[in-house]
Image (cartoon, rainbow, N blue to C red; front, top):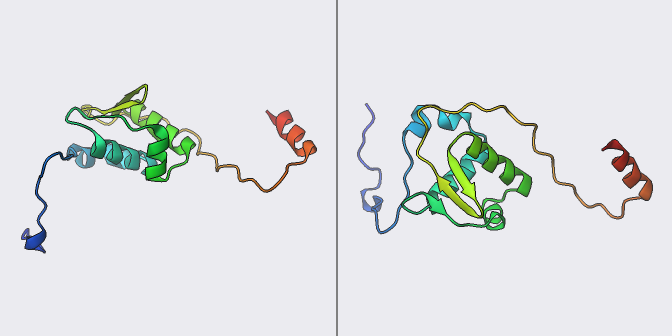
Amino acid sequence: MISKKPINPNRIRRITGSFSWLDHRLLHDGFLSAMSPQEMLLYFFLVLVGDKNGVSFYSYDKICALLKLELDSFIQARDRLVARSLIACEAGRYQVLALPEKPVTIEHPPAVKEPVRFNGPTPLAEIFKQLAKT
């Protein structure tokens, strides 16, 4: 049997002021296994920074910088968390919601495109070729 005794009893975490918590159902009821890594990262961040009602006010550029996410990845993760009924967002505010009764299944969108890298001036012929494809 595995011992539940702390490995380092001098470093046991204590609640001091504000704190965050995760519902164990997130893991045990399959919510977590349905999420992409970017969704998990954003969800955990929003839980961490939310107030007692789960509300936070971080701008998308600050979130992207802190989490090292490209804007497209952030938007996709945010939209998927909304579709999963795990968060709500409105005009720069986010709210982590109480978990729904069971995980919400959503379709997988196409993979996020790699960011375009600048490799010097693009010839006009290449620009017109790209425009013709759209």
